[in-house]
Picture 1 (cartoon, rainbow, N blue to C red):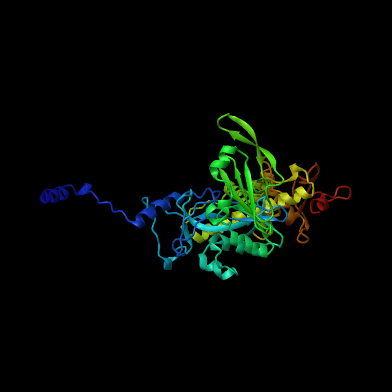
Picture 2: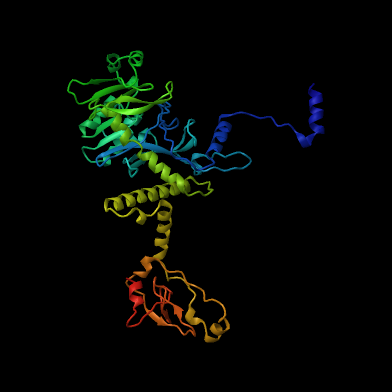
Length: 446
């Protein structure tokens, strides 16, 4: 048998069967290929680092953030890492060869390999603060009184350092714990969020069981508070039980909401506690900024994680700037038609930056054209120069008029003017009327 196998392999060297070997590195390389599209950053995940943290406990919870004037919350979004498609493989470089030292692997996410970024944002998506996860040790150096907080509590304490006292923070169950909420209340930070039942200690035995609430019907709620009344736990049953903890909200005042009933195939009215209503209103800020980033993401094939980071945070700054711009114009009661769309806003920013250097390079000068050349091209249309950006037009210096020797005067570039002139701005390279009764030159530059 062995001899036959040896003869066959030597006779068919062109089609040699190659033995496939499975290893952890091969599995990671295959998972890495899932990060090829640098698309969604909307899915948020919360996991410890299995490499940098010895107490690794995988979690798959999600969370988002919000703020209403004094309301904010924390969240995290994974930054996808660059990929290299070379025969379906990705080489993993060593730590001393430029590899990312804080790369995370989250198998439940669309982009499983990336950099974890915890974000604190307002309810309308404006990012207030963020922190790149570099291991629990890096958080311990930044947070005081970190004993017993866990990773979620450490991140919550870190991002709340830049918030004002009295701020209401909304988060999901990954960040919520009794010790963490009590620590934040000492700093006058009021936390509201969902919580895991294994973090409630003996409080869950005092609440009604899931079976009891299910038999009572949808909309059933129960509240349990501490002796001093500063902290309460609310259990609400909708399609399934929901546990929430807050230092500022409770069940009262209750209201009603419309929920879909699968059996009746219609919307039914369900009572809802106040803590659930406030939580739903304030959550979603990080999801909004992630959606803004995904609309017009900078996409460039690169092997460098540093470039991917730079492009991601540039997109983040652009999305944040547009949300602030839209909010400011809404406060000023500006008409909606005057507010630029996000794509127009992104295009306007590089145009404005380039306009600062307008006129410093080499430009075609019509004054260098001779009368003979103008006469030879008399039958053709004169090339039209683009109107410069408003920042260039309103610059205080370097706008001097010059007289161009043209056989036929050019049309004035001011909107609404039908006059013709031979006067041109040296910087803007456009023809403008400069007469006693029609001074378009001054109107154009003011």
